[in-house]
Amino acid sequence: MKKRVTSHDVAKLSGVSRGVVSAVINDTPGIRVSEEKRQRVLEAIAELNYTVDAQARSMRLGKSNCIAAYGNLDNSFFLQVLQGVQQVCTERGYHLLLYGHNKLEENKRWLIELYSQRRIDGLLTKDVTGYNQETWVHDVHKAGLPYVSVEGYPEREDVTSVLMDYEHSVTLALNHLYEATSLKPVYVELYNPPVYAPNWGDVHRRKAYLHWMTERGWEPVIHQVCDEGGDQSRWWQELLKKLGQTAAVLTNWSSGSRRLYEAAYRLGKRIGSDVYVMAADDTQQANDYLVPPLSAVEVPYLEMGRAGTERLLDMIEGRQVDRGTKLWVPARLTVRESTGAAAGQVVKGPGS
Image (cartoon, rainbow, N blue to C red; front, side):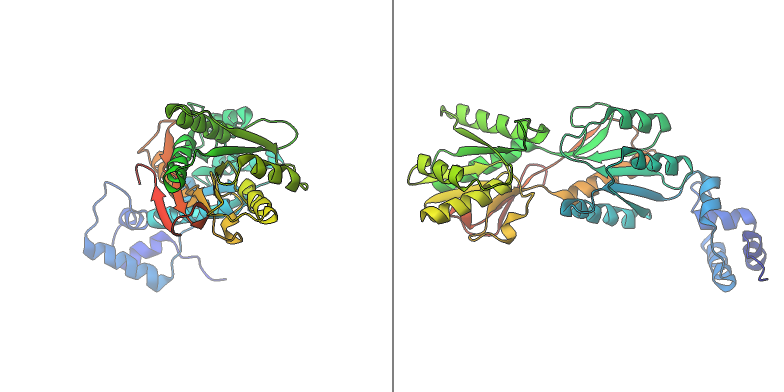
């Protein structure tokens, strides 16, 4: 049976103490090691093919240098968040454990168990907009788990979360729509069945539209429709008829813009000249299949993943311990041909 190589063997071969070997391996702060000794240790490690027992190291140091990311793997935006998370982990020397979304809340709690076993140092979750689960927060705080939510807990003071400013995103959209068309924008608000119950983001979108219109002395025009997934072509065609020959329309969801495209086609109207359309989000990534391309406010998920991970690692390393901090990432307005403008122009909010 092959003898297991230990740090004692490395110390013996390199001619230094085990304390110096440990300081080199763990990059221990406060312990200075000369470059000559460091090089001898590294050469001994390579010659002996020494590997660190990660589990024993994490138990000894109380740190695994690994964080977990939790979210719905079927959601393409979670994948964008993960890109930002991975970038920061690579830059700061952390590993990433991916934990796919499961509808059973009990399974999510395994992440707290992993933390208690020192197999992860912290957790970032991609939640639905405005998500707020009281029991989960209680358990996270009880365990002392460093935790950051992307898009969840916007109104809680005891959870750190990364958010987009939905009010400012709609203001960006309305400013562009009016400057491009000189028309008073109409707002079409979709909601999920069975009844109107807007999430936190849609509440703030509506608030921004009302403020923007009344600030200019104009009567807000809001049309609501349940996005039930059936054939709603008649409703959308009747809406376009009501709006007249030329109209500028902002939909809260990109699915609404897609339906407007379909209705305009049936009525012989041209998007970008007869009807100017844009979306206050891009959750369906509608621009991938709409002609002409759709102007939209796009949630900067990669940047949100980066910001959340930076803050989580700061919490883990003791640089930032305050709970409840809100990290606001600016919206990104991408102007395309559906509003009669040149395609591809990107406008970001303040702080970009």
